Amino acid sequence: MAKYISLSKELQERIHADRAVGWKNPYACTNDMVIRRDDTHDRANLWRPAFVRDCEKILHIPYYNRYSDKTQVFSLYRNDDISRRAQHVQLVSRIARNIGAVLGLNLDLIEAISLGHDIGHTPFGHEGERILDDLYCGHTGRHFNHNIHSARVLDVIFPLNLSLQTLDGIICHNGELEQQEYTPVHYTDFSTFDAKMERCTLDPKKNKGLIPSTLEACVMRVSDIIAYLGKDRQDAIRLELIPDDSLFAGEDIGKTNAEIINNMTVNILENSYGKPFLQMDRSFYEAFSRGKKQNYQLIYGNEKISKVFGEQIRPMMEQIYEQLLRDLQQHKKDSYIYTHHIDYINEYTRYLRRSKPYEESDPNELVVDYIASMTDDYLIDLHVHMFPGSKYHISYQGYFE
Image (cartoon, rainbow, N blue to C red; front, side):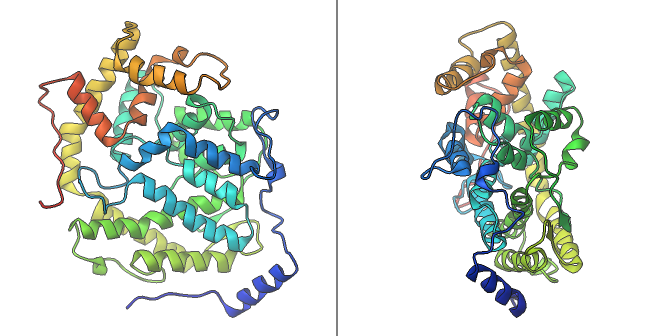
């Protein structure tokens, strides 16, 4: 039987009383705190406040469209009822905004971080990310992390002059690392941000140690896990990878998507209202952590999908990477990396300010930028065009199979 908890009567009365007197959360990131690389541009006004501008910039770049055909968890299915990354970022935004609204935080900042947090994700989800990291590291000794690359998309590939607060929230979103308490560590300069980016590229362990600089980013970070924990179970059941949710231990957080969202939201609010950090009860944290481990055990390690990645997608991505890199080194201007990537980026960003021409980036970075930008179908189609007659081939499972 489903179990839904509610906020305590005492906290509800406190929140109503605070709202009646116009209480403002002193720990919120207000619009006048916004920090940009170029503070002479993108100044806020009444109809486009500071972090609304970030939301709109993210929504209007062409890579935002590509969320809709990027794997969230389950690849190689033609099934519009299965979550794609586009729906995931919307769910994260909704959950985070709900929590942030009750806590009195900046909802525009929460939305901006949520919308942009996965925009640097590769095709084929975390498996694709691991493959691209192996290829990039093999050539350069540097590492690919989708959260770091999301900031590169929004700050380098498309130099949008986004706020430090939004970009920091994006690189610190790490939805694979749950914590009982989230306490922000504030900073106010891009030199610190740039150093964080570089450390994570050189050492993947540094990526796990990133701490958000705002409470808004902390809310988005925990909401990322809340958003996928139960939704992935729904999708796995629909695909008949597991029979039902009876395999999961319900405990305090519940088993179903609806229970998990409600109960985690309520417990975080109960423990965090009016405080300079986010917190959940120990029992909820332990159940949350165990629930994520169960997802890994029962869902994410699907052998059928892993086999396809190892035998088909990995060699396809490797062939594409190596050929595009050779094309750049040989300055083949008719290569897809010029005609469908570099020229495409230059056309879109022709009115934006750059410190140097985009095509002068390191060739490996250009290849990584291009592959990471692809949707699942894009990568498959590109491989067919680049390597006609290849022995590597992807077959999708349709609706009626």
